[in-house]
Length: 222
Image (cartoon, rainbow, N blue to C red; front, side):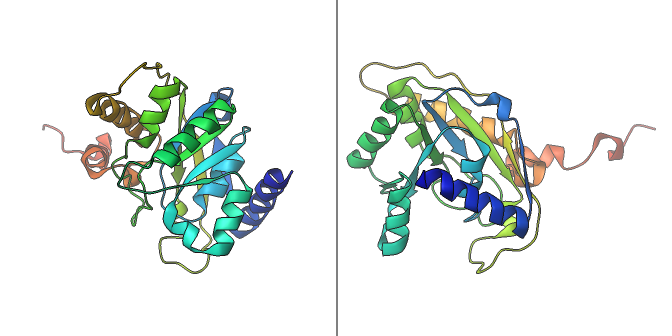
């Protein structure tokens, strides 16, 4: 009840503040599954919770736990904390437990917010959890939130946002030890799945450059 109330309140406020649309809801599988999404704004987590039917437990950076009220609120809606840049066994167990409870595990796989809205390289946590349990991964692209409330902004700007859900990626369950090469390979797959849902101006530069000039504007042989 508390979780659904939070979702409803944020959705109501965001529609009044800047407006948003959701595409691709038909792609959502039955939980358990893992969400991987890009991250460029503080409004992203509530937008993702509104976009899917399943209840989500987010893996949140441990720095947010330094704020007592934020920590209390995040725990109240089922999130847990992750120490970035190291092997956090407590967080690994927490993520596996979320999936065993047949919920959705939400991960902003870049590890931090993008400053300009462009997709940054993914960290490997989502791939590890997916391969350990063998659950599908649902790519979600958040388009335009970096203009609504970018990093450092103190208030929301009025700019439309689109939450686009792509087809889930089937992931096999791997028994035993996972190698770094296998984990990184799947991380890149998930990163590409999200990138394909983003507009050129939010894709990594190496992918966005070829799409920056429409075909009919390119020089043609005379």
